[in-house]
Structures are given as C-alpha cells and as structure tokens.
Length: 200
Image 1 (tube, rainbow, N blue to C red):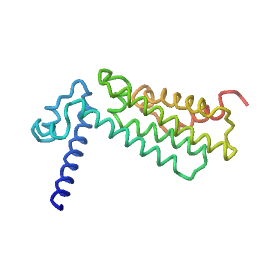
Image 2: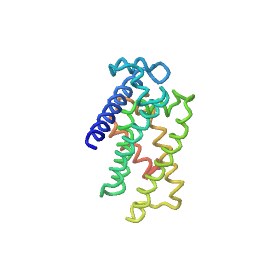
Image 3: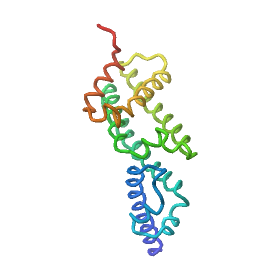
Image 4: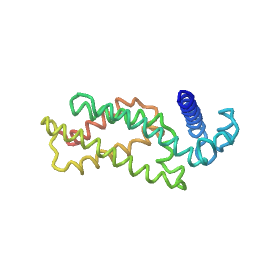
C-alpha cells in the first residue's frame, strides 16, 4: 500500500514537472512551433516518457491550458470570497484578473486564437466566459444588497462588465498599454464603469 502511494506521488511530481516546463516552452515558442522533442529535451527524458503522461502534444497543451485556467480561477475566487466592500471587490477582481492574465501566456495566446485548430480551446473559452459572468454577477448582487449599486438587469450588467474587461486584456497585457501601471489603469476604467463619462 505504501509503495503504491509513493509511486502515485512520484508520478504526480513527474507530471507536474513536465507541465511546468511545457508551460515555459509553449509560452516562449507558441503551440505550433513547439514540438514534443523540445519538451522532452528540456525535461531530460525521452519522448516516450512524455507519452506515459500525455497522449499527444495537443493533450499536453490542453493540460497546460487547464493548469493556467485553474490558477486564474483560484485567484479570482479568493477575491470573490473576501469580506470587502463591493466596489473594492470589483476593483480587486479586475486588477487580479488582468495582472494574473499577464502572467498566463499560454492561456492568453489560446484565447487570442494562436491555436484555432485545437478543438478544446472553444469549449474552454465558453466555460471561462460563463464563469466570469457568474463571478461578476455575484459582486453586483452583493453591491445591490448593500445599497451601493443600482442595477435592474444583473445578467446584462455582468455581461457588459465582463466584455469590457475582456476588451482590456490584450492592450493591458501585451499591447500599447502593456507597460503601464495596472492599478492606475484599473482605477480609471472602474471610474468609467461605476460613474460613467458624463460630467457631473
């Protein structure tokens, strides 16, 4: 029993090591240019060893993407569950989303269409968008309960805010604004989201 457990732990560790190195290589060269040989060489194992853990390059890339999705979801859940003011929570959510997204190169490239040939990406994108809408909706409902927001259609408001954040991912991660101060940018956007652009 003990030996089986140790073997299981070692297998998990090996798989995590492969995933960690694969994340780095995929993020550097992209899905199309990366080969299993590249990853095997970096891991210092034969390519056959990779097939013990993953069926194909696509299977390995899917595991890498799911790892990054889990990292992002975990960080956002921490924000959602904090006992903070809804406006601060919305700010922290956007800031955490964009700063974490900056560090998840593979997920970013997958979402931006670097790997449109890979079928699972569309499913992940859809689930990711639905999860985002659900989390934003939770913040908005909490804000109305605490009499801080006035919202008549939670779903539409959540879709609107989620779409706005999604539109900022590329410019604030890799575009013209990739080097700007993220906190200041989020404060500017949040002011527009919460108060609009009308002169008061």
